[in-house]
Image (tube, rainbow over all chains, first blue to last red; front, side):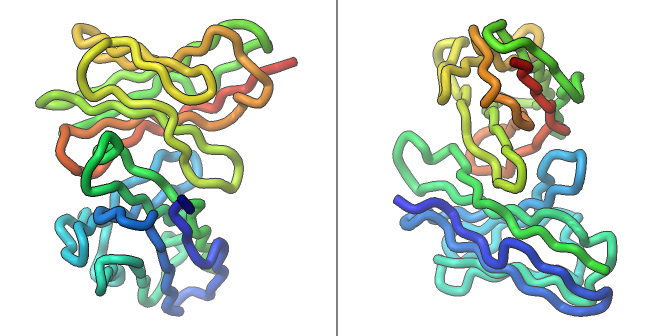
Length: 116
Length: 113
C-alpha cells in the first residue's frame, strides 16, 4: 500500500507565474483534501473532494486558486499569478470511504512552493 | 467554530524521561481528536486518534493520549522519551463526519541525550 504522493516536491517560481501541483491519493481513497502550511503554523484547510465532487472550499482559496479531481483519482491544485504570500508547503491528504480508518486523513510529503 | 490550542511552542525533555505535549480544543459538538508528527521536510504522520470509547488511546511508537472532556484536553504522552522522538507535533480536531481538520500551531519536541 503506497502512501499519498505529491509532485513536484519543490517548486521555485517568479511572481506572476502560474504553477500546478499534483496529488495522487492512496488507492481506493475517495476523499481528498488540500491544506497549506506556512512556517511556524499548523496546516490550514483549502479544499476537499469526495470522488470528483469538490464539496467544500475555504475562504483562503482565492479566485487565483483552482483545484480539480476530474476522474475521482488524482487531483491538481493550480495557482495563477503567484504572489510572494503564496510561498508555503502545500499538503494533500486522503481518507478511505469505509473501514476503521475512514475518519483518518493520511498526508503526503507536500510540495514546497517558493515565489521569488 | 472549531479551534485547537497548543500552549507550548517548545518542549524539552531528557531521554528516558516521560514526556507530555499539551492540547486543548473547542468544538460545539462531539470532538474527533488527532495527533500527527512532522519530521523535517516531510509530511504529517498519523500517530493516534480519539473518536469514542476509552479516554486513553494508544498509538504508534509508544505514544498515548488522554481525552478529558471536562477540561477539553487531549494531551499526548509517552512514558520514556527517545532522541528519535524529536520532531514537530500537531494536535487537530474536527466535529465528525469527514469535515476538514483544524490544527494547532504545533509543538516542537526536543529530546536530549
